[in-house]
Image (cartoon, rainbow, N blue to C red; front, side, top):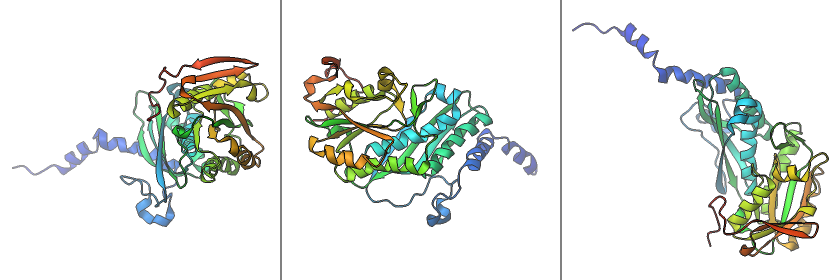
Length: 328
């Protein structure tokens, strides 16, 4: 029996694709702090098989978004930034506070991956929510990014399903921004003061805990109008929107404002008696615009638009949008 050639075996093992691929992890390792929760000690350091998080009181919220391929290809830094922000907005929309971020990244070029990771890092630092793990592949034939955020809700949950007939529909949105061309994005975050952005985000949990609002929906890629339809569908309600009550920022048309994806924008449901408390809670934030833009009604009404004395049905209730309708 011949003696083993350990040198040759070691050389073959070092060429294993699964092993060599682990060098891709060096990119995120260079971008993010390795000990996001120092109080937990070394067991919470990045690079282990799973992330160790501090205990939290309340129910957990989990949100995930896949970024649009064109945005990832053409504007990678903003895609990384947005991947964090859109998930934080989803957590806030349900009255929660974020705990940690994970991501999955595919790219064929290290420089492109660095831009994605840098956007993730800046957003993580801005909102003080650590990136605690993920997946990185730098040998991909395509570019892709998915981001998830774990959060906790200590008080009442602001489920979209909790809106009911008679509730007022309020628009809460940050108008101090700019259009992020060539996309239909309203960016009120990348140039803003980080501490102010964190206070804006925390406001949703404060409104939930105070009982000021009882249902909400983050304005997403479907714009204000698409989000309104999803809100009504989930609640099993009709919703009439008063377009005369919606004031776009200077230089932005009403059509564009109804369709844009804002960095901070929510539809809120609250009883008419809560209007004063809601206005008082938002008043300290000069850059946040609060408007009562409609009212929830019977399910048969679907979603309709009212303007200048005219009314037109936008979405009939018997037409499915997402398939996640009311459960009772």
